[in-house]
Amino acid sequence: MNKPKADTLALMFARDILTTATQTQSDQMNIVNAYNAKELGEFIRALSTELESLDENTNTIGILNMYKPELK
Image (tube, rainbow, N blue to C red):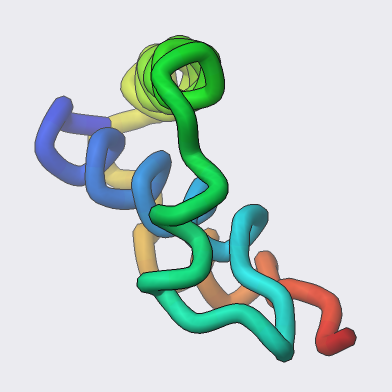
């Protein structure tokens, strides 16, 4: 998978992990401190690298459809 697609998917997954039914995006940003931001950045970087190792013809929409965050 190319880097831009991998980065986009990694960011979307990280956003969904941080999201709960009762939090807004501004609430999420209030809980992210410098330490958490570094750890989140490392997680996104690692996930993006893993996604990049997928075949170039990987169906991005298929991956998104397989991943459905649990509603809380």
